[in-house]
Length: 268
Image 1: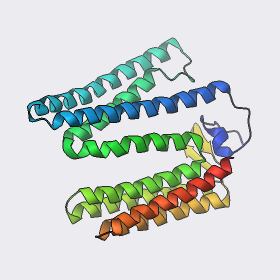
Image 2: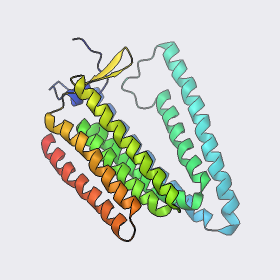
Image 3: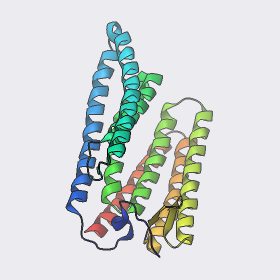
Image 4: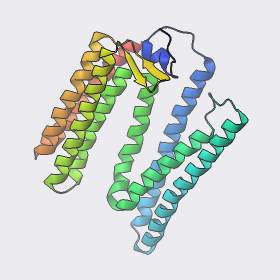
């Protein structure tokens, strides 16, 4: 059966194929760009946080935050215009990192980060110190490891993030909302994996595109089991007090480490 395969088809299906050097360089450059952006983002936030600590410069820092998220919107608009220009002129930019879509995505990231920071600078900046490197790490896993390990990594990250947020926000209601969000995300994954399995490894996106996976029975088991385990860990960490939240985060970290070793060995 003929299928239109997205960019990652070889890694997803596990079918040996001759790797296009341009594609390999393109992925490497994308990963380096994301890591560089997150690094400079953290350094910039550290500088901004230092300015916020000075009363005389506090208002200047708040104004800079607003300028940055507005600048993100400007970059999104510029990126979209550049994409239209590229499409109109018929440029083939399949393996080019610097293009309109890159500019638009960077603008979206800038807008999202500084919109969150603008909401509560004193606490959200510290949260971004963790969120940006975590995003870069997950992005590396997405391009370097098996799709099932990427899903496992997301599950572990969601559970740990929920517990961490549960320790920073005040009020039991917020913890219930966080737990509800975790449960919804985990159920969505289970339903999605079940759909892929029932369709013999196919994930259909509209009429023209579909992803084709060749998951083993063990991979399906891990993608069913991990969201359940992480949902339980998140529930325990959010609903109990004392040292239990820390223990739940350690448990999620240990689970991630064990699976990371397993899937790293499979890559060799």
